[in-house]
Picture (cartoon, rainbow, N blue to C red):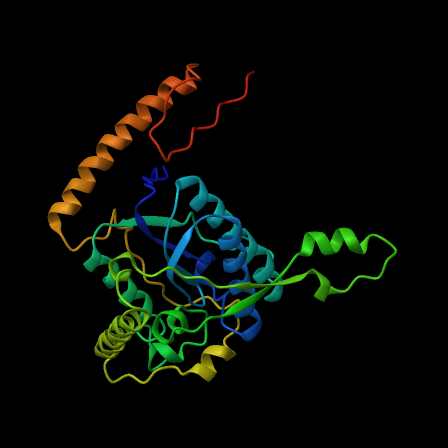
Length: 299
């Protein structure tokens, strides 16, 4: 049974998903980076979700975000469905794109939040692909968080273009392409700092990430940027790291314990409401941030 998500509007979440069989379907290229970046920007334009950090590797992604449960759900549906369709078309992949339902674990304290940011920065280096995180050729939030760069991506309104193409009037793709800014929010624990101070904190976190990744890799030389870009997107790695999804991310055992107790109470309330709802009490109140289960069709 899939875990019931415990979303709270003022909580930050660490969101993850992986491609089917860990295939390298998002292997970086300028076109794939542009496509995923545009999908992210379009999602942020459509749904009031705050994005703080991200990384897209060849076969999985991590995001740090916050928002109401319904907005996160719609943003993630937009993100994953468009990547599956648009990136899948670019790499000639027509089958199932994602291995499973995405995970979203709450980040309970500031130290854990910075720890998640460092973990995001480590990608590319800890796997032995590049020597430093800055050299990862895929889409990452390092330019915004470390260098203060403002990037824009071009979103193509494919549905509008197709409708217009059915008329006899000549249409051009550029007329249906919109330039969108990639907007990241400062980490809440750094929000009171100046922009330069936030950049300095991010640089220190990046340095720690590179140091930790080098120590993890040892003396083994990295694969290198050029060889990463040469990999075929349909490639299936010989081995994939498997680990249980954590319930939450916290540097404080007491916070973790309190969250587990709150989640247990939340689950009990949800299942009690679900039982009433599915047996005919359609006015049942569900815990905030949850979705009602589907009703079985009448026979």
